[in-house]
Length: 331
Image (tube, rainbow, N blue to C red; front, side, top):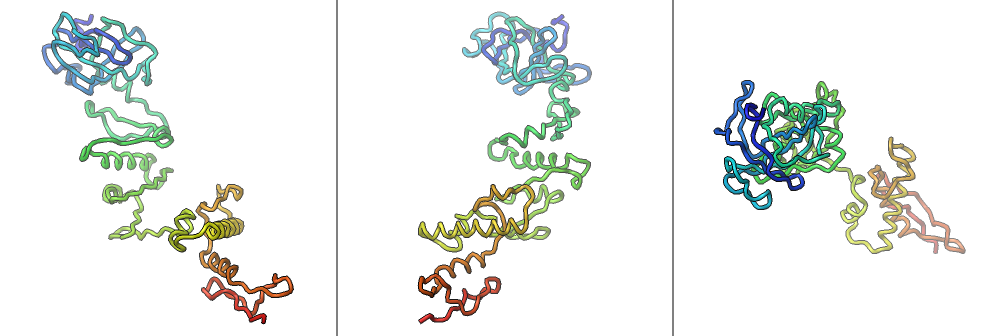
């Protein structure tokens, strides 16, 4: 059956974990195969192969090809035959037509290895779950749409890696566009993506589906304003007060916490429990009130027998930047 099967490539010569070496058949006289009107490259690095095991099929990716002697780590001399070989990294399996990553079993020596056709590729890439978004088409079969699980993509750490000029930024822009346009249109999409574009690479690619804020806005961009209360307390205090002693730092942070708690009590924020409020929580508060209360504490004049009564004359106003309470001389 294998001799007349146009997808037949050869047989397994050795197995080492997920790495399989394959002895290519002598009948492969060309690097191209024509199957059902489609042309396939045979033994191309990066292409898929299939190893059928009864009702189950293993799928792998060609990682290396050669002739005569195979590398020592994939089985040594391939022995008789054409002298041509492939190294395959097994990637997953299909049971009942559904592809899954990982392996429940491994092939044996002399198991047949087949070229993956478009029908097989549909088993790998054809899943159309509700949480999946299309990101492009398969380079070897442009009529097959490649999709990613949106849930798995955004709830796990992901990275786009490549050398300089390989298209990392283009790939990221394409992924973001696919995520945002996963609904019928951008307005109906529930996706909310915050992109920190430090080098200004993405504004041109995403301007039609994004609101762009810039510290140096150009035409069509909005000015970027970061409210002071959104900064961490340490960064804010370093900016407005410089170096602080430990006692002063405690006084500042305690007062910021107090003002944020009062602000949250007056204007509750959905999803923010007052019990989980910290000094770094992004809750608005008055910087003028912070200065007013602290400077008042530092310069307050006290009177009375216990020196515990403020010598108040006229209250100040933090909102108009009026100085702290004016006080009469108690002496």
